[in-house]
Image (cartoon, rainbow, N blue to C red; front, side, top):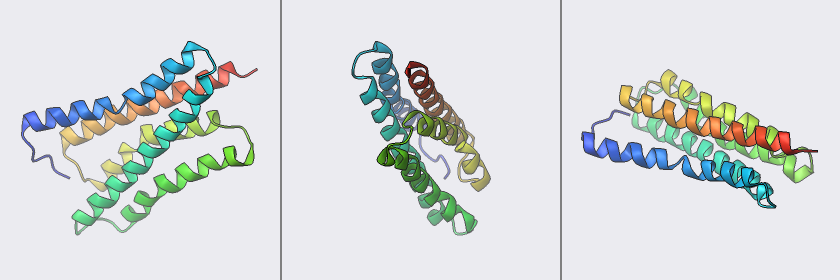
Length: 154
């Protein structure tokens, strides 16, 4: 994906991207408040992270379709975020330890997701810089939420 937008348009894209960090930031704040909303913050934080991770897979799929010489493995990489998100939800359905371990994994996967973009070579320097900022931001907030949850357990 090349950035053929005007600087003003790309600036708006950046702000909208950074605004996408707000739900996870609010989940962290809600959890830190320390009331009964903590569980809602953890579950909501997981749902948001899994949704965004799945969205990244959709971006990779679309980019691969738009690039005729995309490597064949790009489609596998594009499907993995959705499958991982569902797999990380299974512990809750079975009554196992959740959501903190799942949040830890999601945080790691999201933070490292720009490595896939780099291997696919679908974006220019400005796009990759934005991807790293957003992925490290959401990944870090997800990890913070997981660690807060783990530390609050009896």
